[in-house]
Amino acid sequence: MAANYGATMKIRSSLIAAVILVTLGVAWLLGVARASAPQAASAAKETAVTTHQAKGPFDVKLAPFKSDGIDPAIGAMSIDKQFHGALEGTSKGTMLSFRTESNGSGGYVAIEKVDGTLDGRKGTFILQHNATMDRGTPMLNIIVIPDSGTGELTGLTGKMNIEIAAGGKHSYVFDYTLPAAN
Image (cartoon, rainbow, N blue to C red; front, side):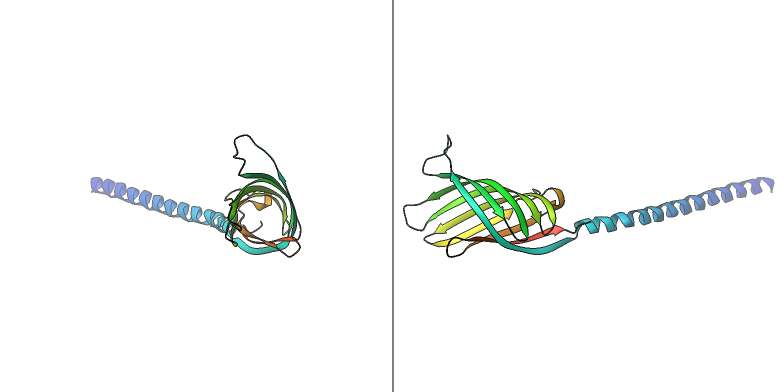
């Protein structure tokens, strides 16, 4: 009976140890889950985006320049802009363009770095232009290069349209998304 009692105690001790280990394991898992819940909420908060539309006028100066390696039939110009309205800032960039002999056809590509404040959030971002004119019918695509936003504009995505009124006044309409401010 004493030998049987010793074996029973070993089994009981093993069961108690197993129950304690399982209890500790469950407690640890629950603790990890609770601890990561704020992190998950924080991550969800960081990935929440808001969609906006910014509008306003802008002034633009284009200055032709010559560069070795660029065909003379392709126009090269520097871009210097001043944005007003919901986007307050400046941009500098480079444009390459070509116009066919057919009246009303041509195209341009450009890259510009915008430095300013967009609806109260400060930073920089890069715009990429791609435009074609097909016998007078325009196609314009201006997008924010992914992951180019800095400062409070980190995570910015969007598409901009340019409108040119009679008399040459330029304005922009910028549809964009931005992670919610912390």
